Length: 460
View 1 (cartoon, rainbow, N blue to C red):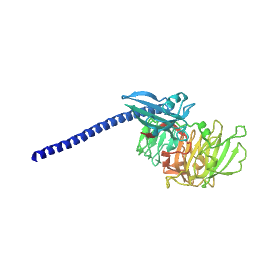
View 2: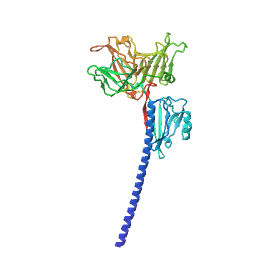
View 3: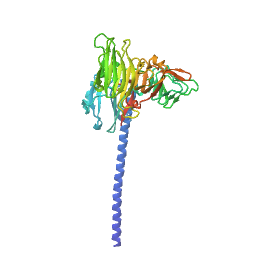
View 4: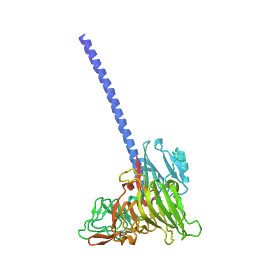
């Protein structure tokens, strides 16, 4: 019995070792397979990343670039990059692009007709993926990296920045930021930034031509950092405004007269509006829901001026152009402009106002509405060729009050709001500015864009 038991014991242990060895060998093979798959997918992913970065750099350097790359060899694999640039392309076709091996990551792009056969050959199809509109400002980069038969996809979306993201933006600064001044939000000047003493900048500050410090101490406070050499020219394309406008005010008499428009916003979401052609009389006032008057959120005044005040309930941008016609292109604020839902108490407020003038934006002198009164402006204001501030009569008025702004000031140059003596402002308005934090990520409808692009989405 002892010999048989020993033999059975040896056979049992042998079987156990064989099973363990078999399982161990399978574990080793699986581990090698996993490492190999990880290696292949990582290389494919890195190739796709390289293609996306190269394409994004091309768009940053040349906003009209849309050539992409075809079967470009990188690190032992290949990359195909498709660029949809509808804002600068012509004669484009909308297709639904289906990445090979990754149909769940389909993406809507526009392509030139010459590229259509190749796209259809690998499974793309005409039309949109979900029936939605193509963003005419959005550049889409689709980078497909392939390594040893495995394809990984990186999708990058870029669009121009909104000027509304700036708390203050000036082509040149004629009034020096000085001790006692506090600036909220991003600050930029296309010229050289000159400061006096210790002004405080809470957001990031950029300039194209550097920094000069005056006074004693020469100690501006840049709590968001300072960077020079940044080029952001002040510009806008009026043809884009016209094509997207939900409402256009213009001379309909065929005599090329200016058009003055009154828009008085009501807290219930309506607008009281009227217009005056040339030197004629004001038309009868009409009250219309903002969503009906401007269904796209954009109101365009061609060769005219805007007079406005009230309480904004909704999102709208009003563009006022001069187009070489004298006495046009200005916006006049007649009384407070504010939101129904203040974003400082409700960050989810959807009330947004953009005021865009080809020339100046002014607080109007009025003995009952503005003189001797604190004034509120809640909007992002843009004066392409002019400046933003009170009428001269208000600046010189001895009843010193406050101009409380929530939003941004984007203009060709600065304008004083008060007269000063050695102890501070004596006449006019104290300038009290707060930045609307929502403008870091969103802007009023169709607000002017910068020439440069920024990444708004990066999907890997």
